[in-house]
Amino acid sequence: MRVHTLQHVPFEGLAALAPALRAAGHEIATTRLYAGERLPDPDAFDWLVVLGGPMSVNDESRFAWLGPEKRLIERSLASGRAVLGICLGAQLLAAALGARVVRNAEREIGWFPVERVAGAESSRYGRALPPRALAFHWHGETFDLPAGAVHLARSAACEHQAFAYGERALGLQFHLETTAETAAALIEHCDEDLTPGPYVQPAKAILGDPARFETLGRTFERLGAVLP
Image (cartoon, rainbow, N blue to C red; front, side, top):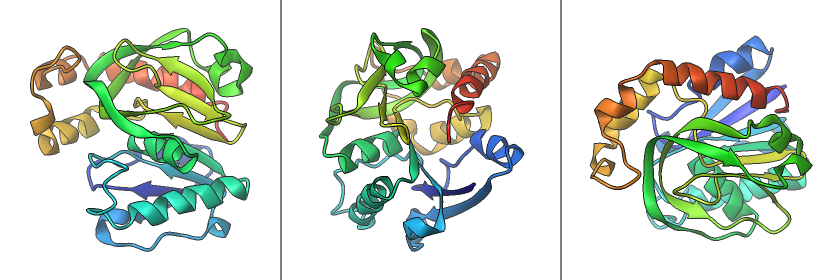
């Protein structure tokens, strides 16, 4: 399968998702939006993976590529391509489906559990999620649930942590792909986000338990088994 990733900043890439995709035999191509690279046509890929980033989906005046990116997601969905959105990518997917993206009541940064919601089992993605799993978070905004989407998961800080749209689109506000290296890169480049808050952990706590990244991997394996 031809996988195309949309990368918004140099320090938020595929991380642990890259070796998993290659091991499954997928081809990977990347558009580095921060470097001014041109967006692909949907005919060039089978699966679009939209990654995270510190900007808002509403920052089109600052990042001229956000509008065309949303339209690419719309075209990808309309043409039957699979779409996976992670963090900012999930917000972009929600926006492309007509939902609002707004500031969350609390910033959520660090290790917090997500819980599968009632009714999630109606989606194959929901059935693949465990009832409760530890996830990595780094966001200050959230999205309304798009019309026609299935709500999959919530956390104490954020009601809409995951949704499915049909059988080909999945949005994850949380991160399962993060490694210790990519978490350290986020801390280095976005340290201004680590001001105290009820759902903000300090850098030492984020990096203090390497086993947590292995836990992410096990949850990712369960979900990865039903991804396109």
